[in-house]
Image 1 (spheres, rainbow, N blue to C red):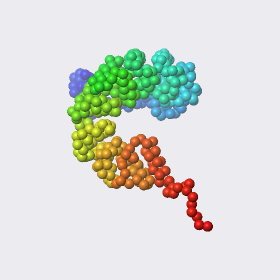
Image 2: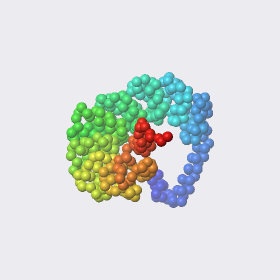
Image 3: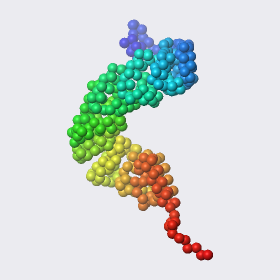
Length: 383
């Protein structure tokens, strides 16, 4: 209450503080605090220990200097644990450079992490590779009990150790949540899958794919899935079609909202001049379109039409709207240089991943360079 009184310039203990006085006091306090922070010296033992391990202390000093100010650090202890796990000197230095906060963890905490993660890895060599790639995940030691409980729960779903370890490394936040919360979201997803016609036999694989694509789906409210599926039903999609959309969208289904999908559907219906059934076919073939906002889709369609393509061509190959304007421009230039005709040829050549597109260009280039005569036929040369 004292803080609130001061903040709003009200009466507190019989005194009235003006905003000007409060500003001066805040400035004076912040100045004293910053002065104290500057006067704090680095922990010499921490710096020397990191130097001995060939860690780039200058880099740490620039990015996370507060680690060097800590009164207590466990540099050598953490390095020894990593060495016991099989990490070499250079790897240990790189790990501590990437996540210097690791030296503030106690040896007991890291030993517990090592034991927990070790149950999910085939050997400690695999664990070291994970620590190299995801040091923050490994050295985040809070909510250890939640991690244990969540791992046990995921194992009851028959998810293999590799999937669980990948989730733990790439998205540790979901393991900090309570088991009950994660269980609620997963049960909602499972019920939705079965209600739409999915089978119990296929559900495990479906769930693994969904969590692998977007594990953060577990951090979203489960009601979002039900709301989105209900909206898709209002657009005329059958249970089988909604199951297809759910399987294709996977983790994206939780990122959508009925309003976003409605705006996208209305835009595609009008801009692509398609029927209700045609709209359904477009969204079934390119469900990712539901994820983009109307301004984004409008900009991409406008850019494609300016290149000389027709609405009919876009309607026949709607996946081109999933590509950014820059990618479309680049690919068109490449194809035109190889003899691509905007009026005649399909937009399908623009679609796909970078690898797919390069493959298409390679085939066109080969046709362009192919000789027009039969190289094995004898040549009639006048002597």
